[in-house]
Structures are given as structure tokens and as C-alpha cells.
Length: 614
Image (tube, rainbow, N blue to C red; front, side, top):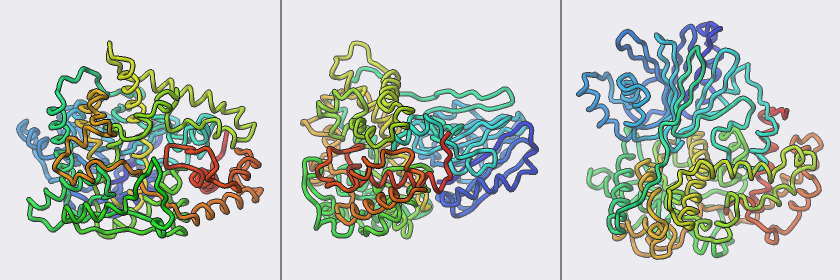
């Protein structure tokens, strides 16, 4: 994985702007700590930071290739998992290669097929290709949006970058946030409307889209979308297909010239990927697979079972590690570093995020990086297969809003009257919800229950999953760790999208068809244990720390958060017994302590990024 950035301008001689592109590139050093590169021409400046994963010698960027009188330059962030197949196909068409890198395969694919090259790729990517002869920029993002790509139009040009900070490093971009951006943070956040960059004038290329940009302007087109059709496979065939797809995705994503590990929570998703990976290692006579889990100091002491989290993952990790014969590493996080890393998490995301759900992952990845450069994660199986409680709870299904944002009135209560009047939170949330529903690819004649479940899956895949993919990308790449997500393989998503709910909900269990598909791969108690969410701290010291932090913010008249909130309401919440609050506030993981931490993150963001609200 890497970091990319660039500047196209039709009126400025960019060969004289090396310092600007170097500054933009430098903001992405964490994404690519191993190497850097700059390429300049009259109207194009491209920057790249490299994390070496495949072909250390031949994969340097920006990569330049000349063909049929044209000079093409690529900067690329991502990984292709079908590199060998594409390379062989291109060789049959007469193309030759100078390296083993997927970067060159991607570039030659574009030279050979143009934008339709995207249909050939199995992978995660965000890339830009500049045709210096035609004076034309092509940019694209992977189908599910695993890898980020932001852009901003300025004057007679365009800026782009893997992260917002790269664009903010340009002298013509100011860190301004208007009412809509503020609504994204205070009403939608930590989710984001697809394509929204929060800062004024900054957008994100949506998943499954590409862009052409030249002197005539910008053209953005969708190249991939979900297709709704009747599912004709019986349950046995469906389970066999799901198992093959997950196995193939997991094995493909082990490709690397550097150490690879898996994140192992003891739950269904990570255990399945680890099982496939461990078996592949054994077949290849490699050393045992290394696995990593995360927990918190004194969590076992304070953990309390509930319907949402009936058991602690920590009890199950050694069971599956022993069963699969992995070399396991437990990462233990203490409260002071968890709280301090809330600031690091803001800087990694460039916007407020999921509080300690983010900061813990940042610390977790930082430890993993000491032993590995690539990790496989079970992220996104819940969105693809239906693992969350809101898929089968009638109150959530009938909420007529995003099921992770059902507490909108409670959110409104923490806003200042002026801000609430300006943003109209309930109207804004309703607008974004209806916007999402209008996008759903309907299946004519579908029963009302199935149609509603299709809506719910679409909301999860396009509105909720990006929250977690953003988190995974920013927190891992902030530490120079590449995390891959096999359940985001587009073949899995396309196939499972059309499996009827009664099959997905096999045996009346969340992710039932996935459990059935993995029969005999995992121990029965692992295979059928109830889903447990990503672990968070139950130590009361965490609540006390963020409580003090927020109360200090409220006592500091210079705090930039204060004009946005109802100070008395927030103070009352901070001083209250969190157990009595009607929460969750966002999703299931963000409850009382996370609400306070999110407000503290907003304050940090406004201050550290010198945000101006316009």
C-alpha cells in the first residue's frame, strides 16, 4: 500500500512547483515509509510514498511507460490479487513487462484497454494515470471503496490525494467547513455521505467510479454497481459457492514479499480467514502463521455479559489459535495510551472518528507493524452477510432511518440552538436517508419483507461499511501497516447480494449461510457462537478520563467546540451516570464514553486543523 497525490493545472508551470508537490507528498509519509518519488511536467505534478509489499526493486513510483508515442505516468495505492492472470493475458496480446509489480500490470492494462481495464481487476486500489502526450488524467477507485481517493478543483486545475491532509497541504486550499460539512460531522458523523470530503471544495471519488480530466473539464462515471436478480441456487450450492469464494479471496490476498499475518478475534469471520491462511501456509511449507488479537488492561475484571455481547473474545482466541496451530500475539492496551491516541486517530482520519474504536485500532496496528507489514482482517463480513442486530430486529428495520443513527433527537439536544437551527439535523438526516434509498437497485416483484432486507443490505454496504473501511485504512496506514479485507472481494459481494434473506438467515442465525458454508472448517463452538463486536475498553478509568477531558474543554472559553454545542446539556451528560443514558448514540459500539470522546475529538480537529466554519 502507498500514498498518492497530484496536481494538474493548465495555467501554472508545475515544473516550478516542486516544493508544493513535495509538501503534499510528505503528508503521506506514514502510508509509505519505505520510499518516495516525484514526477513533474509543465501541467502535471505527481507524488508517491511507497510501502514495499511486492517487488522491492521493480515497483518504484511514479512509474513511467512509453507506448505508441504516448508517455504514461502512474501513481497507485492498492493491491491487485489477480496480477499473474492479467499479466499473462497482456503478454498474449503482445505487451512486455520490466518488473514483477502489480503497478506495471495495472498501468499496461490501462494502456491496452482504457477505462474498461477496471473490469479486469480483482483488488483494492486508488490510482491516477497521466497521459503526458494527450494531456489527460484518469483516476479510479476500487468497487467497494477500500482505498481512498480525495480531490478538489482549484482555479484551472485539480488536486488529489489518498488523504485529505495531502490536499490541505496545497497553499490554495483552506481548511473551511460550511453548513453541510458541519452537518456531516455533527449529524451523520462519524459516518459520511458517499463522496463528501467534509472540508469545503474537497470531494471523494465514490467507490466503483472513475474520472477523466482534461482541458475540457471533468467527467465522472460509474463502472460498477450491484445488480439485483433472482437467486436460483439451492442452499447446498449456495453454501458451496460461498465457501469457495471466501477461500479463494483469502488465499489470493496472502500474496506478498514481506511478512503476512491475520487479525484473530476468536469470532467467526477472522477465524475463517485464519483457517484458510494457515492451511495455505502449511501446504506451502511455510513457518506457522502469526496471528494478533487486542484487549485492554483489566477488561476481564470489568466485562459484563449482555445480549449484545454475551461473551468476551479473549476467552476464544487461544481456542482457535491452538486449533489452527498459529503463533499468536496478544496486544494489551492501557487506558492512558488509549485516551492519548484519540488525538492520533483524528490526525489519521483528518476528521473526528469512532473515538476509542479508532484509537485502539491505531495502537493495535502499531504493535502489529513490529512483526508484520501485511495483515488480513475479517472486516465487512457483517455488512455482506447480515451480522448486525439491526438486520433482524423489527424496531431497527422499521425505524425509517439509518439503524445506527436512531438517536437523532438525543444528538440534536447537544447542539447549540443556533447550530441546530442552521443545520436542521432531523431534516438533514432524513434527506440523506431518502437519498440512499433511491439508489437501491430494486428487484421487480420482490416480496415486501425481502425488498426491505435488500434496502437494509444496501444501506450497510454503501453507508455503514465505508465508516469501518475508512477506520481500517487510516488507522493501519498511519502506522505503515497494510490491512487487507477478503470479505470485500467484489465477487463475494455480488453473489451474496442476491441470496434471499431466508437463506442468509439460515438456522435463524446472523450470517447463517456463512456459518453453514464453513461447516467442518472450524470447531462447532467457534462456528456457532454468537457474534461479539470489536472489543472496547470496559475499564471505568476510560470513562473518567474522557469525562475530565470534556469538562476541561467546557471550562476553557477558547475551546472551538463551545459555539457548536449546548454547553449545559453536554456538561450534564458528562457529569451523569452513563449507565442511565438511553444509548447507543451511534451504532452499537459508540455509547456514553464514546459520545464524550467524539466531542473531544471534534475539539481537537477544529483546533489542530485550524478549521474555519463558514
